Amino acid sequence: FALFFAYSTLTTMIKFFLMINKQGTTRITKFYGGIETAQQREVEREVFQAMVARDRTQANVCSVREHTVVYHRYVGLFVAVGLDDEENVLLAHETIHNFVEMLDRYFGTVRELDVIYHFSSVYAILDEYVLAGEVIEANKDLVLQRVKALPQLVAGGK
Image (cartoon, rainbow, N blue to C red; front, side, top):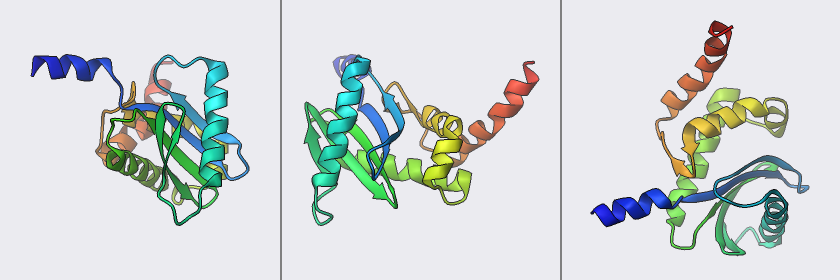
């Protein structure tokens, strides 16, 4: 048990979290781990190319470099999560789905313009949901409650 615990604290489930529109413009990007900025842009480009090259009848899982990429297309946005090969793909699907549900609750029905103009709120939701590549809070109501309380905390600190 102690060996498993030590191993699980040294690895991260999620290596990156991306939201890319259908034209290939990255709207949200969050990398967990030691990937340099230049490599991050290359990974974003390769992930987008892999997603658009796949037929809609194929599974929403593909490989890019050493990562397994799980993605969903929501209207005009791709939401993608990069994992190590040994990670649970179904859990990644659920992670994406929960994140988009939180965005829908926060914005009504989330659109690309919401992500563009309110990116700080999107990042706040993502940061409350995923920390260091691990889902830290699966309760959607609690995540949204914390994000909605942030402006009050900031205003109280002035």
